[in-house]
Image (tube, rainbow, N blue to C red; front, side, top):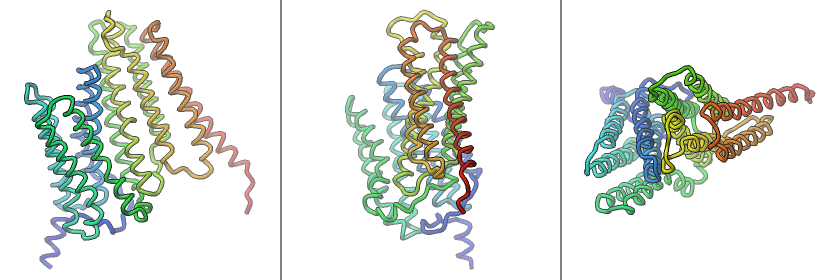
Length: 405
């Protein structure tokens, strides 16, 4: 009896064979997300401060690594989390490691890259341990976590090599390690194809990914506020583009959560993996939108040389990347049979919106800030209107179909 009480108090990880019940997101998971709010903000600020190819590549790596860390911690909690102390401690240690990584990235001096690499290696090793340790309590999981353990250890070794290399090899090795981190689901599908086809991404995990998207949307709002705050003269004409910017953010929010939110992923680890992977360019585009908003107002206020990055071009490209991610993600989501035709129409509308936004780049030199925001907003509103009308038409058509019973 005493042993059972101890096990209940400690809370070993839930077995992979246990039936997963629908649940709501816990307060611990929401608390865990807070540290990633800071991490995402740090990645966006780094891109804003380094507006060149190297800065963009650093942003891609940082965002990918942050998302990978968050995804592993979230999936672990969803699959193996319990009310016991162990789950809380595992979450706490990861929050400490991510916070330490943020501190090293914000440091300056010659040792910044070295210190940041050590922090990333610690997170890599910890997440490897996190999945491996489940096998201590669950023999079935020992077989399933082998691809994760071995591939993550190889990725750790790749990071270790970067301590003794210089550019451009260091950057290449960083991206190789990042690519390796997303390979375990592929290895699992190859080794255990039959079992992998039965995997279903839970509703709570879908909700978690929506909450992570909200984190990035918050950074976009911060970008708008910071962009306006950089201006010395807050005249009346500046409040018009400010309001237009907020409406654009709301339109992007509506498009994402209107089309993606609460939609279950198709059955099988393949579709779950592709959905999780597609979130990377989608959220990266959203983060780039935040950076573009930060510099957009000042760009139109001051004279700039040819070498300065064009924030209007980056702005339209970022929104296009965000919408492209949604376009791809729709392939992997489960819709009722009667809405399959609707999904194809919506994808067509999203594709047209992306084409229009990219076409606008050709004419940006002659536009004012207000003109840019109005035209982009009109494109987004037309997309929303087209999707809404298509939904109404499909519903009406279904009502007109006579009951065959």
